Length: 72
Image 1 (cartoon, rainbow, N blue to C red):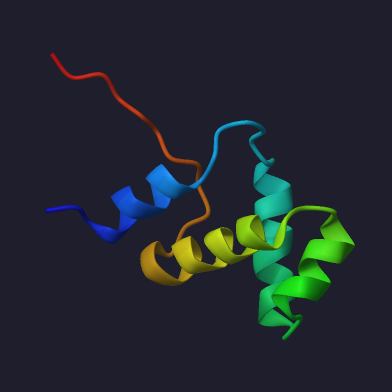
Image 2: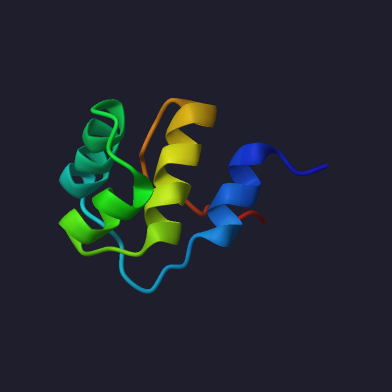
């Protein structure tokens, strides 16, 4: 069974990782009642990325990037 954190990690692309500051800025804007569209335009990142960051923060309480570990 997959957990919510696994699903979020799998959905987020790895093409360009956002800085911790920029992810925190997304959450700050969200807490100031900015819309996903407004945050996206302000920070020049996709709406889906903004939505994924907010979802992960709500579910896990963190904006840290997913860490993939090798097993075996």
